[in-house]
Structures are given as C-alpha cells and as structure tokens.
Amino acid sequence: MSRPATEPSDLLITGASLLGRTSADVLVREGVIAAVGPDAATDAAAGTPRVDGDGLVLLPGFVDLHTHLREPGREDAETVRTGSAAAAAGGFTAVLAMANTSPVTDTAEAAERVLDLGVAAGHCDVQPIGAVTKGLEGAELAELGLMHRSRARVRVFSDDGRCVHDARVMRRALEYVRAFDGVISQHSQDPTLAGPSACCHEGELSGRLGLTGWPAVAESSIIARDAELALHTGSRVHVAHVSTAEGVEAVRWAKRRGARITAEVTPHHLVLTTDLLTGYDPVYKVNPPLRPAEDVEALREALADGTIDAVATDHAPHARHDKEHAFPDAAFGMLGLETAFAVVHDVMVDSGRIDLATLAERMSHAPARIAGLTEHGRAIGVGAPAQLVLVDPTDRITVDPATSHSLSRNTPFAGHTLTGRVRTTILRGRVTAADGEVRN
Image (spheres, rainbow, N blue to C red):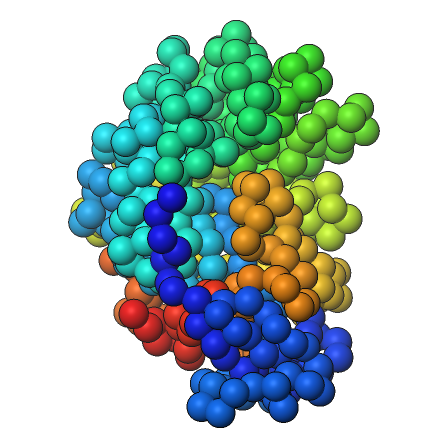
C-alpha cells in the first residue's frame, strides 16, 4: 500500500465546540485522537503544536464523493495537486477523483497513478474512482476487479458524464462489484430523452431561450431502473448529483422497497435555479442542469430528511477557453470544493433545516461510509484518526475567484457573500490548510 498523503502528527486543539455543542480540548498523538476533554491539555507533551479553537466548531473532515481533478490529460484546467489544495482549503480531508480523465481511469495502473499523485501532493487523501466501462464507452466492463485489488483499492466505479444506459451492462457491473461490496455511481441521464446537446431544464424557459431541453424524466427513469437492478442483484447503486423532485421521489421509492441505494446532491443544485440561464452566461452551464425553484425545494427537504444521503461537490474545473463560448457550445461544470461548506451552511443550517451535526453526517460520515473510507468520517472520539476541520459558522465570506487554489475560475458564486468559513483543515493531526492558506 502507498504511504499516507501526510505523515501522522501531534496536535492540541483547545476550546473548540464539538459539532456545535459542548466545548472541549482535543489531543492528537501520531495522527490519532488520544484525549477529548479536560485531560487533553494536561496530557499534551511540551512543545506540542496548538490550534486555538475558541469560538470555532470542530467537525470531522469533509469527504467529497465527486471531484474532477482532470489529471491526466487536462492539466491546463486542474491537476491533482491544485485540486487537492482547493479541497484542503475547503475543509476536505478526502476526495474521490472521477474517472473521466485522458486516458480514462479504467485500469489498475491508471488508478494507482492517480493515487500516487495524491500522495505526492499531500494535501488530502485522493481516492480514485474507476470507470465502469472501458473508455467510458458503455459497452465492455473495465478492469473492475483488478482496480479493486490494486494498491488503489478502488471500490466506487462511475462513467460520470455518461450514463451506463445499457441495462445488461449495468446489471453485469452490479453483479461484479457485489463480491467486494463495491458501488456503481450512476450519472442518471437517459441519452434517448436527454442527449449530449441537452443543457437547460426542459420547460417554458428552454423553449423561450432556444436551448435543448433536459427533462426530469431522463433522470428519474434511470434511477428507477437502476433501483430495480440493485434489488435484483443485491448490489449497491449510488445516484450522482440528483437534481429533480422526480429523482428524489424515485430514490424514496427505491429505499422503501429495500434497494441498496444512496444519493448525493451538489451545493449548486441546492441554491441556484434555472432562471439564471436567461443571460446565457456559460458559468451556469452544468450537467445535470440547474432546475426550477420547486426542484430546489425538494432537494433541500430530501437532504434534511435523509432521503439524499450526502453532499458532493461535482467540482468541475475548466480552462477559460472551454467555458468562454456561446452557451450551447461551452463546457459543462462548476467549481465547488472551496465554497461547499459555506453554501450548504447558508442554505441548510442558517435556515434551520439541519444542525451542524447533521451537516457533518451529510458531508463527512455518509460519504465516507458510501466510499468505504474507514479512516475518514469517524466520530470525534478517542481512537479515531484525526481527520478534522475547524469552521467559523458566523463569519461571512465574499467569494473571489482570484483567490482560488484551483487552476480554473468557473465558480457560479463569484461576488456572492456567504456565511460560514473554513478555518483549519487537519489530516492525521497535521494542519493542511489554515485561513485559506494551504500548507505543504
């Protein structure tokens, strides 16, 4: 196995509020929480580095199920080093890197390369996602077993950006990964209902703007089919970036039936609506597209009640020359890692829909469980690996793309003021980011 992205370290965090509840000191020894409470400070060895947590909230480090790091192939848009730096600045201690690189992550060797790039960067743990099919072509299964048995220990597979549309291929993939409790993460977009040119929620607005429509049924029909296949195979399916009320209802229905199904929602789908497309600004072009307010409300309710298990950023950096086109020709995608906490805190916690403990469940515990990352998403207690984040839930930030650690600048939140700032990110007891500055 590869060495950890950072070597374990000692640290004393003083006076932080655990999950927004009781304040306590936390002592970390060799990357593991050794004491929580009044004994932590007295047990700390002389010279142990300290972080002042007064007025801050301590949460488990965030885990992102859906990150595009672009390397190899599009290092002009992002690299593993720059993307994982953005992740650390955003409070993430682990990210799952999508397979739609060039070449595609569809072999054990390709997966190990991504893993090693993450280790070399050292900002957070980078876990590769393997492709479901060779070349993302939807026809022949990729090396699922070899990727899982490799040093990368791949457990999540996705052709993200492309739906595994052939039901027989999807069934075979689910049957194959069941042997090691793997999961297929599906981009739920029936290409016969929403093809590659679909870029706007289908409705009155898409017709008025002359943009190709992307109907909700293209999402919900694939979710329902995959739920049936999950029931048939006894395997696990994960719904990437659910975006519609109909998709939410399909997930609810599948869970009631006992399917082994989980779902994620992006921060941008929780707050941005399709009316933003009226100006044809390509920064708002994303797949699945932004949806009407009623869909946004359904997503918020589903995240609050647990129908949607996790928040995932779908961080999708693009070079300027790929975004600065007429809307139909621009690349799909938005940045998300550095603004995720503030957006979710703003729309879900400040609104009273969830508390900070539930935010930790959706942004840390659940994604780590889904991905099988046993070193992440643990409760803050003695014996747990020290993957932690300190946040200030009252501090307001104004998003400035020029300060991003990403190589790209395609954030939809430029100029927006949000409430909630990531102060310090801690990976195995070592500070990887503090007040926006990423440390090597």
